[in-house]
Structures are given as C-alpha cells and as structure tokens.
Image 1 (cartoon, rainbow, N blue to C red):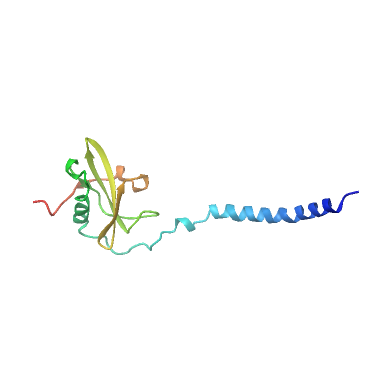
Image 2 (tube, rainbow, N blue to C red):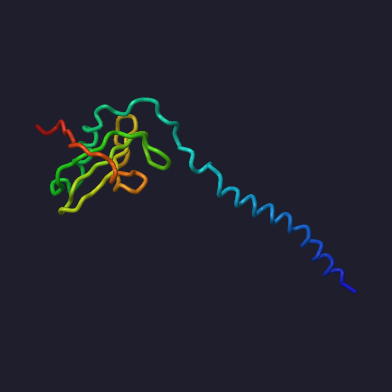
Length: 138
C-alpha cells in the first residue's frame, strides 16, 4: 500500500510537469523574438550631414597617434543599422606603423557621437574609399 506522502508527491509531479513545459517553451520563444533586433531610433529619412568629411577630420585631430598615421581615406556616408550608434556613419582607412587600420565614425544631428575600431558589422574592409577632404588643411 502506498503512503499518503508518496501519493501527494506523485500528484504534485503530474501538476508541475505541464507548468514546467510551459515555462521552458516561454523562455525558448524569447530566443526567437525580434524584440532585440528592432533599432532604438526610427530610420532617418533626412539626408546625412553634407559636411561629414569636415566632421570626421575634426574628430580625428583629437587622436594622439594622428601625426604618425598615414593618409586618411573615407567611404560614402551610410545609415547605421542594428546596434550601431548614431544615425549615419562612414568608414575611415589609414595606416599606423605601416599596418592598415579601419575606424567607423558615427554621427547624429551633425555631430560625431562615437568613433571606434571597425568591426565586422561595419563592413569597412569591403567598401570603396576616397581621400578625406580636410577643409582645415590648405
């Protein structure tokens, strides 16, 4: 004969089985959600800053290694996507101690909001570059 404790444990186990399945499915469905991939800000319909070369040149002047860098080239302005900061960005290519370097410079509302070493999502290594037009240089 089964004890009362054994019967209670079996009943609780049968009740918790569907609940634990529901909890597991809820957690796993969160992994397929698109919530984390929605951009923070709406896509800008405004054109990017026309003077982005000047913005980038001004920002790069603050780098401590700037005097030892080679010629600077930039890409066309592109809209940011996914987790990239700002609304617009351009890739920058230069050399430092004869090694190629790629930066991504991010802009919002006519200002540089962030600069970082380029990562895969920026796709800087596949872009077409042109010389940076620095209005401060004669």
